Structures are given as C-alpha cells and as structure tokens.
Image 1 (cartoon, rainbow, N blue to C red):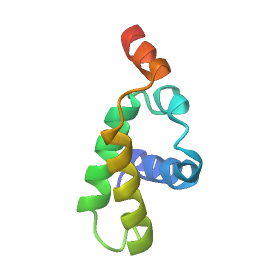
Image 2 (image 1 turned 90 degrees about the horizontal axis):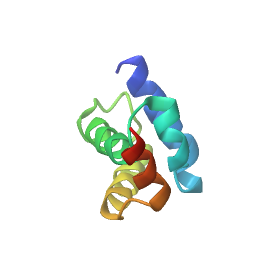
Image 3 (image 1 turned 30 degrees about the vertical axis):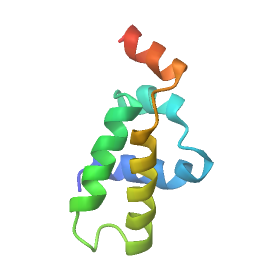
Image 4 (image 1 turned 90 degrees about the vertical axis):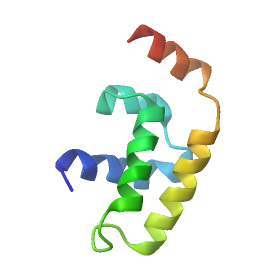
Length: 83
C-alpha cells in the first residue's frame, strides 16, 4: 500500500465509527467523499490479507457500501460544485 492508501485507511478506520467525518475528506485528501469511499472500497476488497485484518476489512466494505448508497449531502454537493 502507498502512504496515501495507508492515510485513507487510517482516516476511515478512525472516523467511520462517528459517521465518517465527510467534511474533512476534501481538505485532507483533495478528493470528494464519493471518490474517497470508492477508492477505499476498491482498496479493502483487493488488498492482500496481511495489509488489512478481516474484521476491519469487513466493516469498511459495509461502511463504504452504505456511504456510496446515500445521496451526497448538501455541504458535500456544495464543495464539489466549488471545485
């Protein structure tokens, strides 16, 4: 995993229990929450088993899937329009 991948994984692992803190994704990573969750989902479904433990992987797959199923919030939509 790259440093960026590790940072995304650490962020998601830390903040997913509190709803994800979507408003911090764009300033922290320079991508929208939707892109963040798409990349994270791809990462946890394709990374070697040694990089992400099973329970974290399973939790993040469910979390990312639920985030991607939700419509974008107004603040996120406004941030996307500003970019």
